[in-house]
Length: 248
Ligand code: 13P
Figure (tube, rainbow, N blue to C red):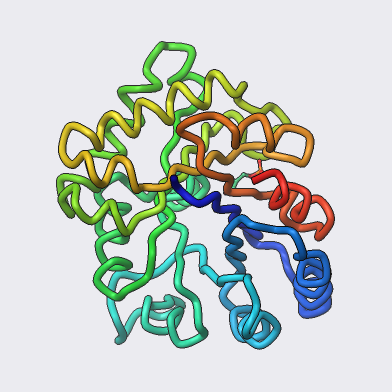
């Protein structure tokens, strides 16, 4: 039985006041939450969130990394730096990074490998665009994204990876994949892993992301191959995030 994981992706949203209020709001409503909770915060707030979450049930994640461990890479942040602030997770290959910052499948694979090598758990994102889906290419696109990582790292290490299936057309749009659509793709992703390593296929958590909210979380998370959520907008408000956490 895989544990339900609910991860908040704050994206580029925070201030010291907002981060403090949001984390303390979440902490004050945690009783009864059985899901694993991860807050993926912008780099400048890692330190503050580390302090606020010490000894709590909330784990910390970042949203990107540079594959090098240190050196002349102005403006970049390494896995070692992320770990220095108590973070154990890092989102890799989010569709916004793929589309806005030209992160190809190869770059994403390299970043997943760098995260694993440094001991961070990658939250590795895949997902098709609306035109991919309309052309009937959802499985092919997602398979290519998964295989780029798998070819580089092998299947065994997927035991240490969290996958997030985020259909691009559902991100920030208010249009959620139906539980059937999401489950179908989640099952397909698991079947890709099964071809190479059945143990990894059974263990790897596959989260759904894309307009998940307190109203649709329970139905999505109750699907056989949906192990939780990667939450954008609804993770920025303590009550809605907690209500999603409680759906798991
Ligand atoms: P929304 O929940 O705002 O649709 O964002 C999903 C997402 O991109 C999480 O990584």
